Length: 169
Image 1: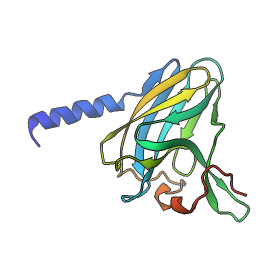
Image 2 (image 1 turned 180 degrees about the vertical axis):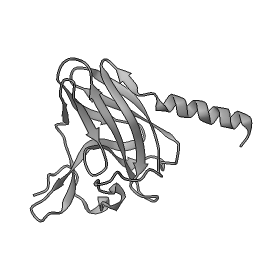
Image 3 (image 1 turned 60 degrees about the vertical axis):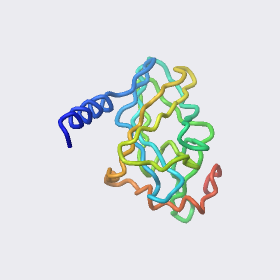
Image 4 (image 1 turned 135 degrees about the vertical axis):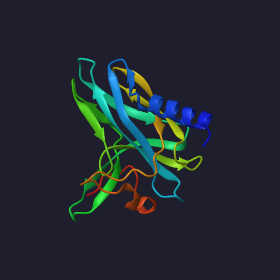
């Protein structure tokens, strides 16, 4: 790698390390990944902090990277099987609180990717809040990040066989 490329990579990494912040909503440690190398779906994970001084609500997410973008979570059904579900109502974000969007839990789901997620690419995601409005987040693709201990590996989910938008029973 040339000196110029090394400097560019260092500057890009520094810029991406800065959390997104708008109107009291701070997004930290965002990253995205495809469900698998050949998949047409993917997910974004991040920590969303509320420093607005009032309760808020994450209503939706959008991105040009996919045909559909939804807020999802995983729920255990009566048989003990984890199912991914679309959370149409979104997520509460309490005053001075946080939404932890992590593998095996809440996340932004990309359905019908328009192009494969490639390592170090940037996916622009707009998070829409009831009170704070829209927060645009530049989400780096990190295909190498390992799941955190205790969380489910998102790539093992059978996305093709799931009924999107319906809670598990």
